[in-house]
Image (tube, rainbow, N blue to C red; front, side):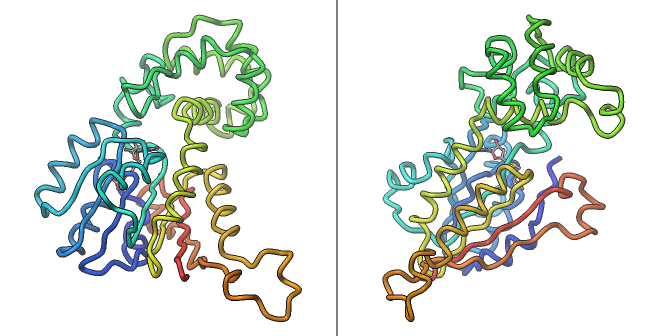
Length: 302
Ligand SMILES: C[S@@+](CC[C@H](N)C(=O)[O-])C[C@H]1O[C@@H](n2cnc3c(N)ncnc32)[C@H](O)[C@@H]1O
């Protein structure tokens, strides 16, 4: 089962009122959406996911609570277009809880886990064409190296890519793990699982995770009402960096205006950073996934 991360904190910082219009960009197994729904008897919840299995489960879960919700089976990169098609141009709260859910990781046939044998897959949207199999077996060595380096921050990117290309075809997750193990020094295997960073990198590439998040978050800035908040939970430094930079760029006075004695009203920031929170040690003890989680909260003020 999926244990929601930073749930209490999200509910608090989303500033929900009973008639709020809230968008959950990452429905997953409905942990956050369920609690939001309970707080908005006179509002509406719009929840996105691109994973049919998550939607199937969560639809039932949410239906037991209330019926003022709409599930949108789409990539959250389409947030603006999808909401526009429902005649919505502004909302009161937007939540992202990025990455994959525990059931996606636990079910062996999805191919996300380096602990379980499965076909190389890693697609969140199973209708999508590009899968981990294509990345591992068809990308050039240079392209693989750059993906492992940039998306996995993997210091052995070059030797792992070389070993991958030499061992093709690679069909399953555990075959890939063996290839990775053969390409890294003994000591590296002692510190942490040697496949962790490579798997993260391939997953990011397959689902184009960083690009879609960046685009969606920029659209979210436009969609949020004055007084409304955007909450983002990230699980690794690359997605956190994107969030931090976007939030910073809209919440500070532009450097070229800083020397002015007073900042003209139209150049004052329209957003403020409300909070940056990590999971408490109690939550981390209960849920290992929370150890790297970070919640950033932004409010529209003008
Ligand atoms: C960490 S889980 C969310 C868990 C949820 N907050 C809960 O408490 O049950 C992330 C979910 O977002 C979905 N997801 C990730 N990226 C997405 C995207 N770009 N568009 C739509 N859904 C996405 C995944 O399929 C997954 O179900």
